[in-house]
Length: 371
Image (cartoon, rainbow, N blue to C red; front, side, top):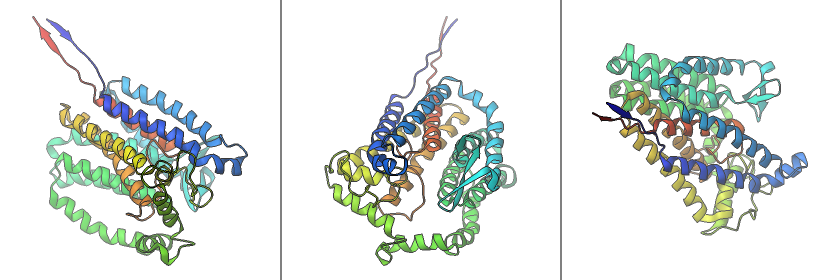
């Protein structure tokens, strides 16, 4: 008996990933050149760093694509433990760097990294492994649901106190969807949501800067020079772009009007320079990524691979949805980068690794038995 095994990757996931990374490289220069020149005296400063991060991300993406994703189970607990340890280190000023009032960056010698980005990957790996191992007990509150809820709650709290409520919301939404797909009882989910509402209300309404963001979201024109400034400048950029845009490199809002146009608000620059056509194309790329990722989840045979596909498809898509929602004024400001496109090493590398794992799961192994 002969056994023939063939591997292949989902082409649309790969194409959408490469297209978005390419858009990110192009827009990183367009959105950052003026700021880079003013801050560092080198208009290529952010472009060179982005290209370097793309190189590192590409190596890691290909690496996780080529290993059997079942082998990722062996790395899950060490990676998860390391990411939690780094989140704890963030709490100590000697190991961390404060930027804009938030302590999210871990400093280890010459290396600066955002541990919450690593948590996104390690948490999905952990949840996929745990949920597939306890598939027959997922409806049991104390065995199948509560342990996962405690892990999620602890990590979300560690991230939220940095403060980084945006990432805490992303991992909460993704893990909640994973639990739903795994088959948790709806009454458990509803009870958890009911109990968490007071905590969420306190985190939003009784923390001054978050309260200002909510008020700015409701009516940015009440404080156009302070709390409403970002969203007003973002909306002006998108409105100015029209259908076809002002042309690549011709954004006006990036000229020190729009804060950090190369990171959280790079979608605004895309809208201004490439217009509705440009933003529609970016949205299409994310839709294709989500569609093909969920298609992989439906077609893969084993639960572990299914949960990996669901988790990483949603991780990229939920974060993109929140980022774009903030940029167009549909959500309060969160401080989340746009996956694959925003300038930033930690975010880009984690996005590419996520795509690599999803591509790995998309491998189709056809076993043909011949007499």
